[in-house]
Length: 105
Image (cartoon, rainbow, N blue to C red):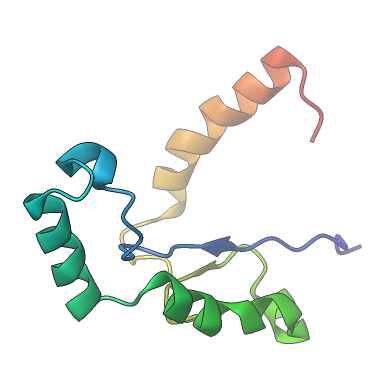
């Protein structure tokens, strides 16, 4: 029986949102320059929201349970190098930790 739960992730990448002010200094020349460059080449938060919002309302997203979507609402496919043995390297210890601390999934 298939689970009624479907999960997907959003990988927005680099977005112009001024969150880097805490690193470069609020309204500093460096911060304004970086945010301007990001804004020239990469989408703004508003553009991102306009692109991705339809994902939340389409039944087609259920076909992609477990998928990760980029800032243009395209599915990010697994890399060819990510084989089962690599995944198990991380999943086995993670599953053991979940069991050890008593979290039910």
